[in-house]
Image (tube, rainbow, N blue to C red; front, side, top):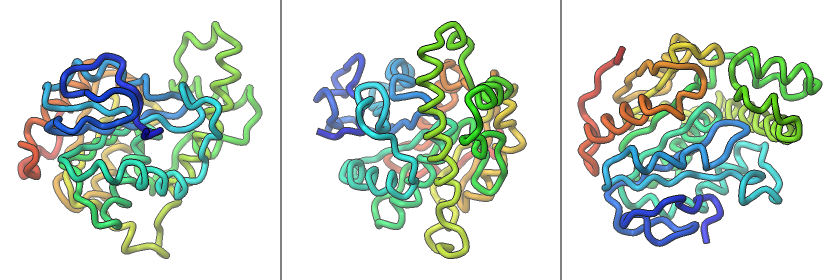
Length: 276
C-alpha cells in the first residue's frame, strides 16, 4: 500500500482500486499536494471538478489525518526521497502536479527530482498561492515564534481559517503542525542553490502559477516570479479570493481548462502568458 496516496472519498470507475493504490486505467493522473497545516482532504471535492479521464490523487504527508501517529517530516530532501520512492513507479502514465502554498514547493521540487531521476516529465505543473524559492516570505522564518505571535502572524496574512478560533484544541494541534510545515517549507526553499546548479535548473515542462487576487501572503506580483523557474511555457492566472482559493470552483475551472489544453499525453505547446 502506498502511504502517500489518500484513499478516494468518492470513487468513480477510473478511481479503482481503493485505498492507497493508483488506478491503472485513468487517462491522466493529477497528484495534488496540500498546504501547510492541512491534509489530503483539502482535495476531497476535486474529483467532481474534472473530466472523467482525469484521476485526482491527493497526497497525504505524514503526521496528519490517517497518518497522524507518524512523525512529520521537516527535511525537504528526506521528503523528496520518500516521494520519489513511493510515487516514482506511478509516473510512467501521463500525469500532472498541483500544489498549494507549501504544496507548491513540494510539487516543484518533486518535479525537479523526477527530472534528475530520468523519469517522464509531467504534462503540467500547477503552483498555487506560493512565492518562488528566491523570494522572502512572511511566514517561513516564523516557525520558532511563541504560539501567540505565530497565531497573530498566521491570522494577519489570512493563512488560518477563521472557524479555528472557536476551537482552541484544534488550534493548538494546528499550530504544532504549522511549525513543522513551515520548517519543511524553509528546507524546500533551500534545496538546490549554487552547489546543485544542474539539479536546480528551471523546469522545461509547462508551469502554471495561480495567485489569489486578495492573498497577502502570496500576492500576484510575487507568484508571477515563478516565471524565472520555468524555461518552457509559463502562465500566470489570477484567481478571485485570498490564500485559500484552493477550495473554490474558480481554480478547478482554470486548472481543468489548462489540462484539456495539454491534449495529454502530448506536451502542451500553446499557453497564454497571463490570464486576467
